[in-house]
Image 1 (cartoon, rainbow over the protein chains, first blue to last red):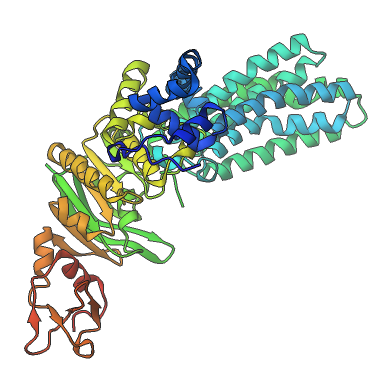
Image 2: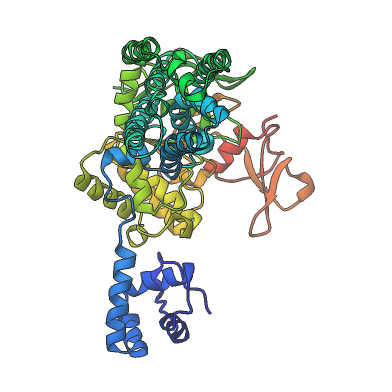
Length: 282
Length: 282
């Protein structure tokens, strides 16, 4: 078929060729060509009349309603709440959120069902670092193709990473909580990572005001993982369920300590946010 | 009062200075940056739009310091930035992408945000295709989507890195009109390779070479730099090293004219080439 002319040149007097219209009515036109014809039909009486003649009145009315619905239909994000658009408003963030939710439910479930010590060990070792890693990586230039369009906006800075991290944590925690009630998963396993994760996120944001946040996140992740791996190594002769309860990172001192660290680091971040360096683009 | 003011502004990448001890001031209107690739235009615009910090020296926007977080956020509320490579989510519609940037610009009220998004998309002549996926838009249409995002909220300062890229002549004309109108109310700083654009609607032109300003004046002053140094010839062997055959078959040359040369009225192109082309001035 003949390729339709650009939308921006209606003054050229272009109209949909009768063959193309017949092909369109028959459903043989797809993709950009169909889009072009539909956009043209929206504003061209002559071609709409021709469409009616080609398709018949009833079919034309039905088809016309479908076209108007499709072309004017707002995208899936358009009616989302503003906070949701900030947190999940890009494909990478939505994917990161979905993967996180799955990670914090499926991994403990599988580990419990198969009673696999290695999976449990690595889950607790890595879980606290994943939310901040997801937020920082989704913010990075390489992962955010449209990031450049928003770089000079008030919200586009470390503040955005902080907000996204907080929203990711807030979204994931209730899912873990529900999973611990509904699924045959030890509550300790599902929830022990949460306060350390908040502490790690707050520390990365706080120290990231002075140093490269990627290096800070990496160092904290390695440090936490080392503590967890050493703890499990020390309890290697203890059954998994008992080891989980005895592990230092699941004990109140570490959990309460994480909460305190999170509060102090959060306050530090708010106080020293002026020192956040600019986003470095390539 | 200055909208933009720089003092000894320098940005280095490794050992090389992309912008080298730049001092200039912008008080309003449309300012065009001209210069070959690698002359420092993009680096300068990124510093003016607060997305890149200087290595040394000072930059002040609206009298505010972008190195200070709070002031940087205030600056970003008042400026619009079109990066050289905006990047897009191809699965978003034009409306969704601009709406996402509007969210990052702190436009939290959904209804007024949607009105503003429609306004800027209509201003760049994309009203008809605002709900089409970006993957289906042409390069010129995508460039206008990014321009629309920069114009959200009618910012006092528009920083545009090669805004005419990908636009056809009719769209360039529309761009001139749009930016001239904006320049009457606020300030536009743009970079371009097209001297025609600068001559058409910039009140001031700055020519950059190797990170430094080599000319700062009006377009007609830039053209007058070449007064007495542009001539036409019919003998190719007698012409300057900077010479080319024009549409009417004569040879146009720039440099030190030979005795008896037929001097012609210089254009802004001639003035720019005289500065930017090594060896044009002996």
